[in-house]
Image (cartoon, rainbow, N blue to C red; front, side, top):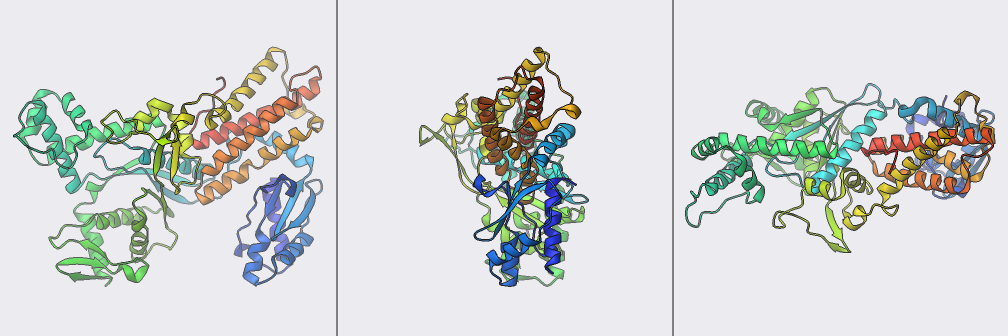
Length: 546
């Protein structure tokens, strides 16, 4: 049994000895903020004390007294305010963990917490009415990292992009595109306005259309120019996402829901007696289910609202058998959360079946001021422009450095810096530096057999600090996946890179002592592997040279 799981089992046993059920509290393990408090900590006593209305310190002391660890695993157990139990490991499990890392390689840190759990993650889903902008880019980075984390922890995950290719916005897009086509051929009436989508990007697309096709689209107002424009923009979105390293398993078209699936959803709600008519419109009594007001499902003219289409879409998700649906929505969708949860409860979904993560706003900053870097008259900044400026790795990492639902100031000046001041380069450089050290060692004739390395030679404090960071990786992965918080990985990557750089400067890796060299090379290889696994989960490359 791995040490982390062994500690969990010891906690379960201690709670059972005290007559408490471990299933009633999550067996959380954390890294203390202050290393002086130990290598690992648990707030379980505070959770138990809250349930029992007991004193947290006394509860922690009772749990600590009952803990019984295998010989050689833990050097000390301490109780700390306001109710933590802290552990300090012996050298043995830290050294053994190095062998586990090099043995498991790219799978080190993975788990099976999500075994037999199907999860659908829907993200980006930007309307195909223009290029992707930076808020959608942030959603792409966060959603992709969450998908990676869930897969790494054993979940059966599908990544989906919902294409809004139906309704008035699509028709308006088609008309704006026809305006650009007629503009190209000098066919505009005096004073004629473009309409809903005045962006220069439509002019760029119009310029590329073969003349025969362009004239046909001008003549055919209606669905054909709308479909053509949507498909062209969608192809551009797909290309930008591919350049960003974000991939989806499936696109789901809103148009596939109309009219039958949307009508079915409305009938379901009417049949359940949770609707009423007012002024010719059908309203959902969502205020009775936690929403701040009732919502319109069908307009007075008989057209479905976008909300009703979204209900039909989520009903389809439910019918596909997913155990959990995770939606990443833009910063202007806070009001959508309660109404969608209310709707899913009507459809019979469990209370936690739908999980909605709101992506915070992004401001591009340069020199302490908000930047305007658009090449299109300052309309907006696209994902492609950002990639061209700072690169996909840097953009993705910067988007992931803060909790997803908080506003983000994206520092362009720092992002363009190719030095260790840039957080991405700092972490990537640690990986590249290790690769360089290993190459140098091999050139000097140093190779090692993991089964024959004497890891007892690793006794320096900097070596121990690095090993503790490596040991904690699986815990960071598990917590990040469970909380849907990939920003924890960026914080971990910075700490691990710092621990390695300190070790590198204080401990000579390749020396005349071949046994110590082998031990330190194994430590380097384990560190390189964990850095790679961390960056891979974030969707960022791990270069071997820089």
